[in-house]
Length: 189
Ligand code: HEM
Image 1 (tube, rainbow, N blue to C red):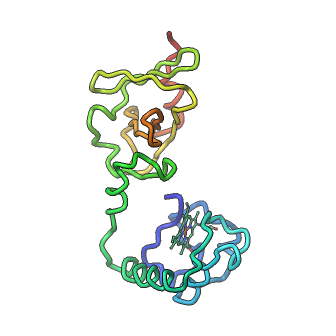
Image 2: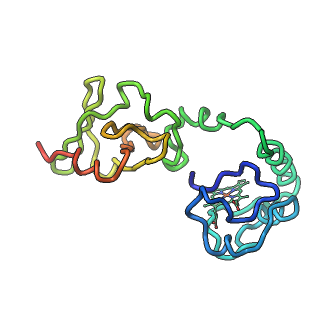
Image 3: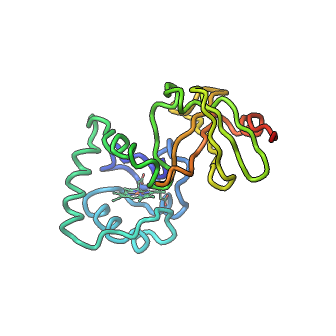
C-alpha cells in the first residue's frame, strides 16, 4: 500500500492506476508504458529514469538479479495470477520491522489481545486496554495512531493494536477513521 499494485503491470501506463492516489506528477507525466525494457531501466535506477518520482528505492545494479526479478514479476503479475500473500504471512513474526507498513488483512476478526477497548493518557504515558482484559503502558512517543479506511481496516469503533519494531516497546493503534482517535483517548491518571 505504500506503492501501487503491480497486478497486470506489463502494458500498463506508468502512474495510471486510479486505485492508487499518491503517484508523483513525475511518474504520471512520464509517458512510460511498462514493458521488459522500461522495467529494466526503472529497476536499475528509478531516479535516473524518472527524476523526482516518489519511489524510495535505490535500484538494483546487478543485471542478473534484475533479470531474475523481472522474470518473477512477469509471472506473478500476469492477468489471472493468484494473489501473493506469502510476504504478508512471512512478515508477521517480524512485527512491522519494515516500517510499520505491514498490511494485516484481518483487522476485522482479530484475537482479543489485539482488540483495543480503552486508552488512557497520563503525563507521558498511554495505557492501552485490550479485549483480553490486559492493560499495557507505552511511552507516548512509542505509540502511533493510524487509520485504515479500507475494507481490510478495523470495524468502526473497534481499533486494533499491532506490534511495531523489534523490542516490543512500540505499537500502532489502527482506527477506522481519524475522528475516532481523540474520542477514544481519555486523559486520566
Ligand atoms: C524491487 C522492488 C520494487 C519493484 C519491482 C517496484 C516496482 C514499481 C513499479 C513498476 C512502479 C510503477 C507502477 C505504476 O506505474 O503503476 C512502482 C511505483 C512505486 N513504488 Fe515501487 N517497486 C519496488 C520497490 C519499492 C519500495 C521499496 C517502495 C517503498 C518503500 C516502493 C514504492 C513505490 C511508490 C511510492 C511508487 C509510486 C512512485 C511515483 O508515483 O513516483 N517501491 N514501483
